[in-house]
Length: 294
Image (cartoon, rainbow, N blue to C red; front, side, top):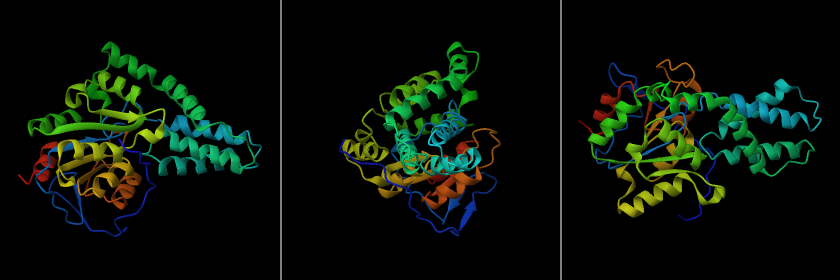
């Protein structure tokens, strides 16, 4: 793949863009969009789009960042620092984790501190996160928890219906690839994606979701109108839209699994250019019918 960095968020849709729901469903269509009906390749983000294994990750990342910022002897309160970190962490969601750690290093330097290299912070974050979620992973590993309990509601139904449409499915995540592959197996999702699982690499420049998309199009000799993307981060929404694909935003309520969209995600993903928004896949059949103009 060619080197291609992950770009910052940019607003595509105006804040007052018109939306409407498909009757008696949770599927919200943006600006009257109609899919091409010629979809052949489907790209999924992982955390928050399919997997809920890492639910609550911000409750690990933000406090860690606050600890490092306090060490700079800043006179800012922990509460103020938490607000600052929460804002930029969420703004960068969808990018590889290393980008959030680059921002942490910049914030430390801004306060007169001497930051470590960003990979050091990323390693510390992963260590702490694994401590938090290891019990979930072990419950999946032992069979104590069924995979259906740790995915966005309706995920297996959607994946099965997509497979029935004979599309090729791909997974691309900002989480390190080794962890993505482990958790894909724990969740019994491997059969849907086969070898097409991609994640962050030690050299962050060697991976991006945009690179994965370009590889899909090039290797299959197709244009972007054949691409369908699902994600809860702005990066994959913008990347799919940029090549002319259909972008479905998943404004998942990861904590409560309420069946209602997370308001912050919904607003941000619509602004990023989503063609449709769903809170989960409870209306998978209706969604597939809309996507293929059935």
